[in-house]
Length: 134
Image: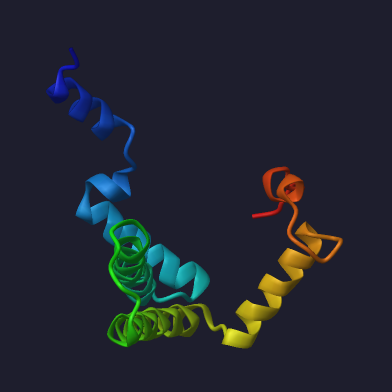
């Protein structure tokens, strides 16, 4: 049997100082702002919000696919609203990283063209990426 208290202590030891201690996190946030000119508060807002709102979108889709919830106009409207919330957080991420939607879409197109050189999805290329393909 696993001793959960020992596991928690192990987890603490393999967790960064910025995660374990507010003072270290605050210092790292100052470093990010000073070194990169990125607003870490806005970046965190975007990152946490994207995760939360994506989760809400996923929950609706999960219920439709696996639990038989109808995808009627009301549910589609709910999905639309969740996508709007996701876009709000994307816009905040763009604000702090000084990006436009065109920047993001253009980079995505270039990445996918490089990944799929024949212009169509291929499982091999999906699973066996070139070095540097994030």
